[in-house]
Amino acid sequence: MSKTNCRILIVDDQEDILTAGRIFLKQHFSLVRTEIHPERLPELLKKESFDVILLDMNYTAGATSSREGLDLLQKILEIDPQAIVVMMTAYGDIDLAVQALKLGASDFVVKPWHNEKLLATLTAACKLSQSTSEVAHLRSKQQHLNEAMNQVGVELVGNSPAMQKVYQTLEKVAATDANVLILGENGTGKEVAARLLHRLSKRAREVFIPVDLGAVTETLFESELFGHVKGAFTDAKEDRIGRFEVASGGTLFLDEIGNVSLPLQAKLLTVLQNRVVTPVGSNKPKAVNVRLISATNMPLYEMVKQGKFRQDLLYRINTVEIQLPPLRERKEDIQPLAERFLAVFAKKYQKPEVHLSKVVLHKLMAYSWPGNIRELEHTMERAMIMCETGNLQPSDIYLSESASELEEVGLSKDQTLGNVEKTLVQQALLKNNGNITHASKELGITRTALYRRIEKHGL
Ligand SMILES: Nc1ncnc2c1ncn2[C@@H]1O[C@H](COP(=O)(O)OP(=O)(O)OP(=O)(O)O)[C@@H](O)[C@H]1O
Image (cartoon, rainbow, N blue to C red; front, top):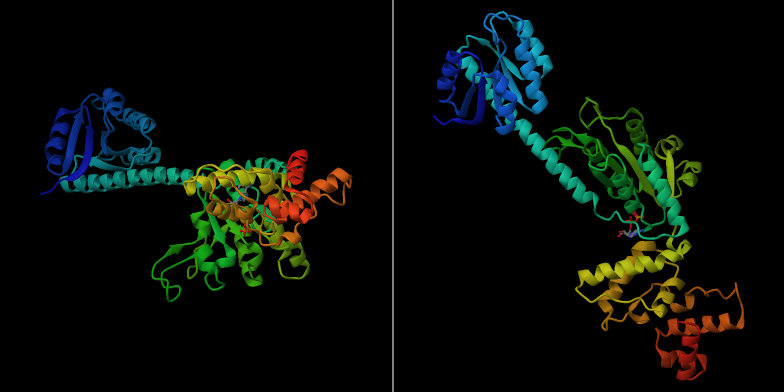
C-alpha cells in the first residue's frame, strides 16, 4: 500500500494516544512525529515543517476549559498562518470544536477516534495543505512574473516641459485608484504612460492587462472582456474568464476606447458603474476590482457632440485626463529619444554605438514626425541597419516626407543675415544628405567655403 506524501505531527500529553496514533498513521503517511510536551511546540515548528498538525485540546488531566488547546492553536497560526491544524476534542466538546474552527483550525476529530474517520480527516487535511502551498507558490510565481512584465517598456524618455507636466500628473494620480483617460496621437506613448502609471501605483505587484479594443470584434467583445461559461456559444468549449477578471486587483488598460460601438459602450458603462461582470451565458455576476486606464487617439469630446460616444461613459472613464503631446510639439525630446533608440538598436544588431551628428540631428529636428515616437523609433532602427561606417549619415535617415517639404527652420522668426545663411546651409546639407560637393554646388560656393560656413555656424 503506498503512503500519502504528507508530514504529520501529533501533539498530546498522553503517551498512549501518541503511540496509538503513530502506529496507525505511519502505515498511511510518509512521516509521523509526536510531541508530548506542548510547550515545546513553537520551538519545534521553527525548526521543522509539517503539512498537518493533529492537536489535542485538553492537556491538564481532567481539565474542561480546553483554553490551553485554543491558545496553542493561536500560537501555531501566529508562527505559520497557513498551517493546517486538526483538533482532537473529547466527546461532547462540539462547542469548543466550533470555537477552534472559528479561530482557524481546519477540522476536528472526536476522541476516542475511529481509525477510518481519522484517516479520512487527515487525508483531506493533507490535500488541503498541498493545495494551500500550491496556491502560495503560484501566487509568488505570479508576483515575480508581474514584476518582470511590469518592467517592460515603462521608461518614458524626454524631459520637455510638456512631458514634465505629464510626469507630475502621473505621480499624483498613481497614488489613487482614479480612472485615467490618456489622449494623444498614434505613437505618442500612451501605452508606455499607462504601464508607468501602473508601476507607480499601489497595484504595482499585480497584473497590468492591456486590451486593444480596436482589435476585438463586435461579437467577441463581451466574451473577451467579461468571460463566458461552457456552452454559451458554439466555440465555448469550457469556462473562460474575461479580461476584467484577469485584471482584478491590478490595472486594466483599454486601448482605442474610441472604437467601441454604441451598444457595447452601454455594456461597458454598466460594468464600470456596478463593478461586476456577468460572463456570457451565466446569470451569476462576479465582483471585479480594477484600476481602469483608457486611451484613444480619437476626439472623444467631438464624438460625444456627434452622438458617437456616450457622455456618461466619457465621464466615467476620465476622472483624470492626461494629454500626451505630439512629438512635433516637444522637439527638445527628439535628441534624447533618438540617442536612446540608437543605443537600444546598436545592442540589438550588435553594432558599435553610433554618435548622433549635428547634421543628422538637424534632419530629425526639421521633420514633423506624423507617426510620433513610434516613427522615430522605426526610423532609428532602419538607420542603424543601413549605417555602414559607425558614423550615421543623413542619407541613413529615411523620412516619409520629401526634403522639400521639411519645415523652413526658423526663417520667419529671426531673419538676420547670419541666420538666413545658417538656414540655407542647413537645408542644402539636409537636401543632399550631407554630401558637401552637392550641397556646395547647390549653394553656388566652393567646398572650402561651405566647410568654413559649417564650422562658423557650428553645424
Ligand atoms: N517617452 C517615451 N520614451 C521612450 N519610448 C517611448 C516613449 N513614448 C513612446 N515610446 C515608444 O514608442 C512606441 C509607441 O508607444 P506606445 O505604443 O505607447 O504609443 P501609443 O500612443 O499607445 O500608440 P497607439 O496610439 O498607436 O496605440 C513604443 O515602442 C514605445 O516604447
